[in-house]
Length: 401
Image 1: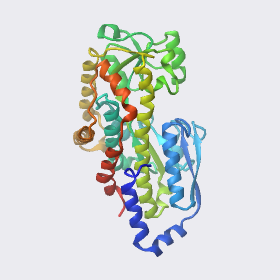
Image 2: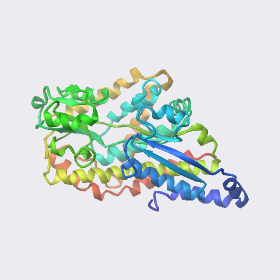
Image 3: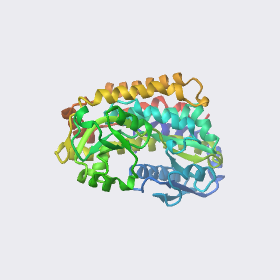
Image 4: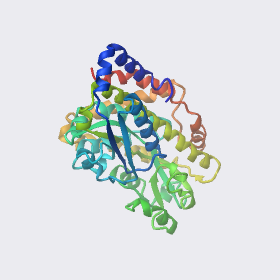
């Protein structure tokens, strides 16, 4: 944790501990020792989410002087991707990772909000930081979302957004003509509709079959982050054509806690956790910079071929804008004024994008040369001033009085 990322929470902690020593001691001495179970289907403790959440746990254990400790279950060893909602709700685990689109019936508002992942620039830093800041604010403050999770006995801890998805292909795709008929693995309408606009045919292939499918030519392209060149599937061996046309980001991957567990904590601990939640999300932002920079080294070195998307990008951008524009018409009733929610979301993305630009981080153009250069400098991007700005402006309003 950097000094600037934690300064707001340190200030809050200072207020808690300096207010009335007796009261501070009372809440801590009265805190029942317990072990909280965390379930992460997506990876292990060395993955981006895992690293951030282990650091989050360590903060809480230290703050509670060892009264709260954790037991971690990685890679679906306790709850899988579609079982986490009910598992955390019922107390099988206390903390878990939710992808809202896996639960369209149970989480219609959160699943609908996922579509805002189409409102991005394609520039990794801005989509991760500005998009992530907007997702985090919205998940924690939009009543339609917080009440929906509360209806499942859950409280939102934090949520983040990935970089934009692109295409990793086993053949060149550098024009609308070459895109025609390309079979692209695209799971979810926010991605498949962009593929269709480019003239591609979306196909549904299990993730664990993707490597072999690309290798054998069962399909031609995969809609995914370029970090899969160096992480997970290491697709550079079977999909050496990087096509950086901008598809939606994976929006609002959400960490939740069992509401009964949360309500059992004193307010002093709840406020500390709120600050720790923000730091965990911000660690994930920075983690994406690190992961994408590793992919960028491969791309910049020519280890994979970067295709020119100048003909594809305007078509994809227009389609994504249409997707967002249509969201008000298919919003769940619980959203209320859907257009106002969409407008507010877009305004916050624009605001946080502007903050990054003020801090000397321009949105990268979508030419092959600019894309390669943007990847090249990702490892040097310092999000510390941006994180400090978020903490100064947003965190105080989240604290429980």
